[in-house]
Length: 325
Figure (cartoon, rainbow, N blue to C red):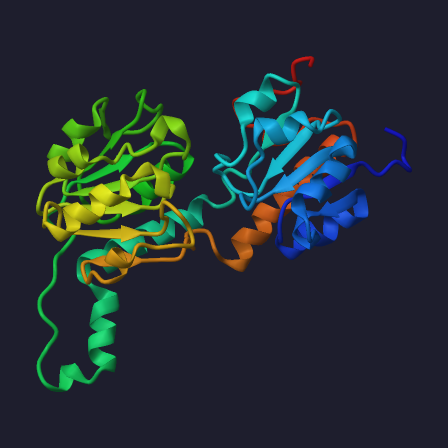
């Protein structure tokens, strides 16, 4: 690539400042968010696009990439990249990158906080105080973590970090994944329903996509039982949301703490109305420090590619160097 050449890059939506500012220095940037007619905009710029920076605001489908014959890299903001058809990209010489590791600690911290808030009803207790009800009588006794076994659904980088945090609570920890994870001391369950029967807390931290869609099903929730608590910091698609609502309403399970939802930012009113559910607006990694680190990794992947070097964090579906188209 000539030193003066500035590859054309599609920015699919508003991104953190480190991305917005950095890509302008390296690329000729086409901002989809500024387009009045998205279809016309994409039809005009697609033949020139060599790189995409995306954060899930726009589905980078096979059909989209097919119209970009010069496309070589999709740099995704986030660990999850289910909005990108990485399998198709990998089969067509396009590398997809994500942002692993830099958000592990933040998501793990939020997961533990969400679990404690759900069990101890801390948001409801604060509302109780602010409403002046403590003047009338103490807040009712709540549930505890002390007598619970914790099951983690997924034992990847973030799952391991969550488990490490929870070790400090001196509670039994087990996990479910397709294969046993290396270098972890916890019991592995190959069957999710069986694990759900044996635990009191289920924490979902698996990637989104077809392979995990609705894996927390009505059957799993029934197995978790009336004392069970579900925490979802994965993707909304991982949980059968109507089944979860029914399970909460019918006391099939005790409570839930949710950071993600099936159709964000829309949250079912039935969940909003429940007092045994703690709801967060997908903020598990939402701190300045972590989002800036994620943004910098997006930029670093793009910069490495633009300089003719290996991208830093290619996803498993798009090993580097890529296959020939």
